[in-house]
Length: 335
Image (cartoon, rainbow, N blue to C red; front, side):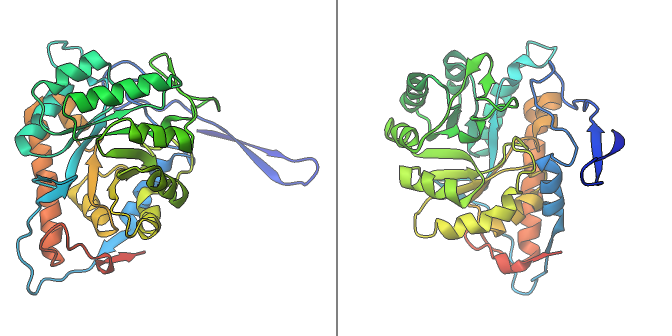
């Protein structure tokens, strides 16, 4: 990064112009397939990581027992509150076209009895993944074509999805206009639109990408059954860390019976513990499994989830939390 200092002729204030260097992607595949954020001050991931690392944990050993990670989501029981986030298009990124990371991820979730999320995929690819899947949630984008949204939601219901939802944070694109994904134009999302999508199926609807009390309560009022508190790996510049806003959202939704998921660079079981202690019902793990999924496939991903569960269990045992319904925010301390 090169910094050049200038002076404002009117105020005498020093102006700093930053010339940003392109950030190299750590992920395989075509440029832009897996987004990489700037690493500069506007990168919400930097603030998120700093906030996560600032949360410390006190120890409560006496009477602590090995915890039970069983978690109920939408009336179904899973082995852990860790769920596999809504990754997309991974079947296109590897040189070895015989591998299908999306199907490998589906197989991991089914074998380990954890809830799986599927992101933006064609109906044909989604149907292929669904054939041998366990429980899945299909997430769609806020397409400008509203009928496409309805069609994709209803297909998911027909094929046995546990829930459906939308990446509401995908409305804006980097150019200040509505986003375009895979050449498909996206558009605005009104409260009336959201209510229509909620009513389009009988499945629980998840508003994914909530980062304010305002959007959380609007999702509730539109009839959504759940939200994902998230900034979608730093889509919004200078975005508030999801865990920082989570307690306010939890308080605002008290009594609503809404399920609150959280994601945002949760790279370890310790990170997941902090999210759960702050009020999440379950968490999404995406980039936390991405290297293992792309490099070592199903076996590597299973090993990583096992490690994350061990870390979560370790922290619960250290702090006297016997199960996933007993998390206690008072255990956390903030630097």
